Length: 311
Image (cartoon, rainbow, N blue to C red; front, side, top):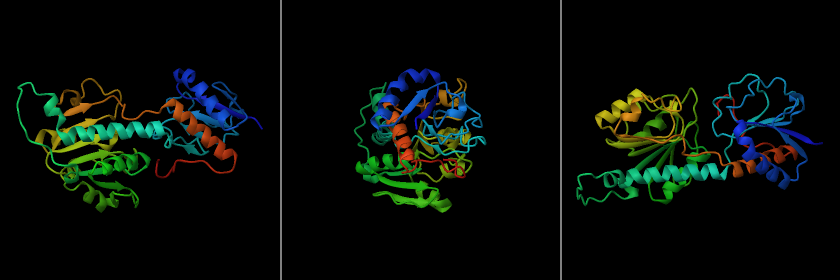
C-alpha cells in the first residue's frame, strides 16, 4: 500500500526538505506520496514542527505517527487531539554534533578564561594559567541523548563530570546522580553547570536561588536546554553577587529575547540566538525515513515521547 506522508512544518522549509526527504525515503525502498496538502483522512504520517498550522489532529483518522523535526516537544505534547505516537528528533547526528560543539566550545572558553584575553583593553599581562580540566567539576543536568553526548566529550577532555537525571542512569566516565538528593550532590561545588533538561513542570526553575548557592563561588552557567529551567531574577542576583561569574544562554522563556530584558545589558551574560543545536535537514530527513521504515516493517518507532513525563 502506498503511504501518504504530509509535510506539516514551516512552509518555508518545504523547498529544502522535499528533495532530502524523497532521497531518504527512496533509499529505504518505501512506496509513498509526499505533499504539504493532503486530505487529512488519507494521511499515514505527519512530518511536523510545532510552528505548523496543524493544531487539530482529529481529522487524521488513519494517522500512524507524528514525526517531530525538533528535539523539543513541549509545544505539542499536551495537545489532547494527538493520540498517536509522537516521536522526537533525537537521533539526528547533525543536531547532536552541533550541540556537542557548542557546549564544548563554551565550556572550554570559560575553563580557559578566554574572555579576559580577548577583551583586554588595558593590555594587562597576567601570566596565570587556568587549572587543568581534571581539577574542574562540571555538572551536566540532563542525561538524555544530547546530555550524554556532551558529557562524553567533556570526559574525553579530562573534566570531572557529574551528571544528573530524573531517573537513575549509568554513563561511562560520568559520576551519575538522580533524584532530589542527587541534584544537590551534582551541583555542590560545581564550577561549570550545563543545562540540557527538557521543559516540564518538574524542571521549571530548577536553577534558582537555592540551587545556585550550591555551586562553587564564581561558577559558570551554560544553558542550551530550555529557557524555563532558570529563574531569571535569581540568576541575575547570583551574577551581581559573584556567585556566578558568567552565564552563557542560548534559550529563553520568550524568544526572541525582548530588547528590554536585563540579560542584554548585563556584562556577565553572553546571549546566543538559539543556535546551540539546530535540526539539520539532511540528517533529519534520514531519521524520519528510518523511523517510518521501522514502523512499516514491524521494528517499532524510536524516540516515542512519554506523554506523562513530557519528553
